[in-house]
Image 1 (spheres, rainbow, N blue to C red):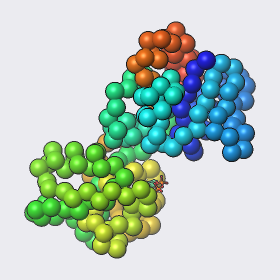
Image 2 (cartoon, rainbow, N blue to C red):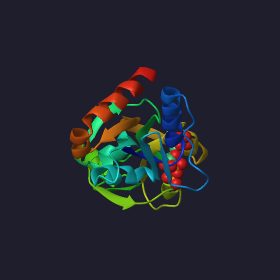
Image 3 (cartoon, protein in one colour):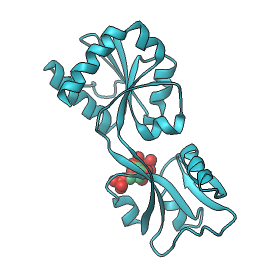
Image 4 (cartoon, helix red, strand yellow):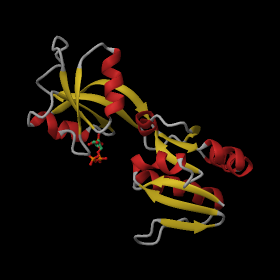
Length: 202
Ligand code: PRP
């Protein structure tokens, strides 16, 4: 039995679509259930940011999660395969009529991704004050909570509709198949077999 942590939402749906294509059968979670057990797989439905924890602590053997989350958490996990789904960018965003003022001793950045933001600005030798938020990041500069944001851009619609522009791209992201080291050793054959099947349909 392989246990697989999936991030709730579109990536879980697209991953299950891949399984449906490989095994030629339906993989669907019942209503509000968070576990789906079938055909030697146990799928777990978890929050995006929680996937690395489930996999790291071996509550799941493998998982699917965005590279952005992997970089933010920076855990000791095996990155098996880029699934090429859930593509997005992590960008610095600022109000349309403003530019980043590099002369400031410190700029205020609102973000869910504190580590990525901190590292990025440290490399530029810029002082930053990180304001950690959990969502609706685009609101922060509009109401004076921050000078700029670091956030996910997918279509760009959220920034645009809130009068922001992406001025710098920190990284490109897509969803990866990951594993923890123990499962990768103990269940190597099962994992490699699945890996090969997924690679074939991608
Ligand atoms: C993400 C991200 C942006 C939006 C970007 O938010 O934080 O707000 O999607 O997508 P777009 O470029 O296609 O507009 P999410 O939907 O995860 O909600 P959250 O703000 O509650 O985290």
